[in-house]
View 1 (cartoon, rainbow, N blue to C red):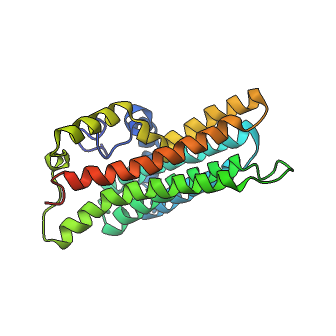
View 2 (cartoon, rainbow, N blue to C red):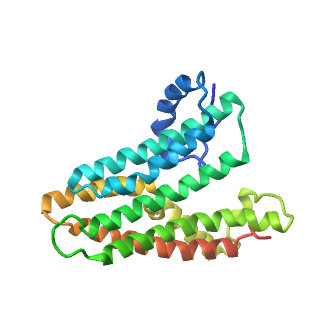
View 3 (cartoon, rainbow, N blue to C red):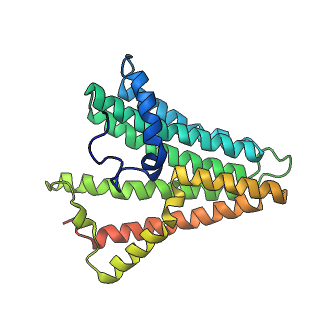
Length: 248
């Protein structure tokens, strides 16, 4: 048994893909690895590499590039599950492992969005490269990383202020209007589209639509939408933190 009680049922800290299917697959991989000398941190390095490789994968023209991007991100998700399972099995826990896991999450999200922007810029189309889309993809990547940083920096601020880790209740906004807005955003889940796993699946759908249409219209529309979501969510998430009790 490598899953703590309730790990697949928790709503925070566990991606829906892990709860839905990946934890079942990862267990089988973990059983093979716990008898080897492979360490959790080594698996985390591989996880990060898989996530970063999504960027060059998305540069492959056509639907196949989008398929490769999904494969790279799913491998990232698999290793993200396996490294923790191996750590629990071997009782090899470290702060460096936690840190590396967060770095991997940042880099995967950024790689997918930057790769998407470069894909929409049509690097290999033979015509003029439209760098606007590469810029918007990079903008979306910066926004996605800032959203994660805003959350992580709450812990940094509380630690430096001598406060204990934030409780779930403290995350609730004190303003009723902001609380309603937050619940509406959580219900729509549009903000998840800038995360690497969701973004890679969206990119695949858009690549299929592009193949039917014969150009990059849908991918370019997707890049613009994700850039807008990332910027809006960066602002809203910051305001949400400031009006909650997390910094008190």
